[in-house]
Image 1: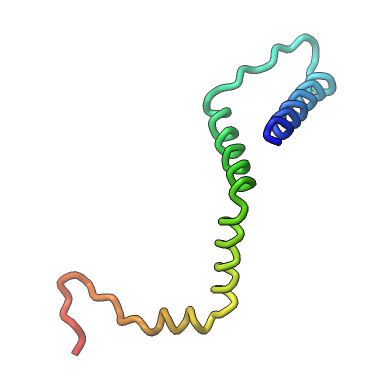
Image 2: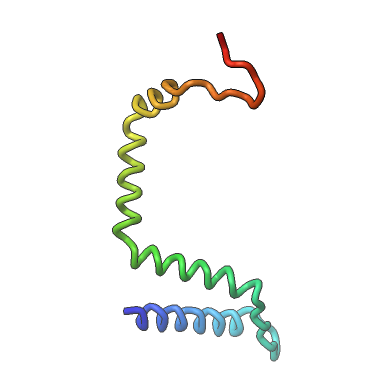
Length: 95
């Protein structure tokens, strides 16, 4: 499965580069070199997308808990308003 995704990505990149070279480049243009500042963010995004794909269950469980929490605003208000006010450092307690 991973080989299929990687080979598809490589094919898309190759076709995109040849299309750009064919339709927009003028004359014999050398392709620019890929720098680390370009490769690292793209690689990070790809790794993150693959991790989200492989770890679907924990992601969906987290999203389900978030939706459940957001669908009960009264509970959120009770938790926030039920807490005592925060005290500043060195300030006297209210009487």
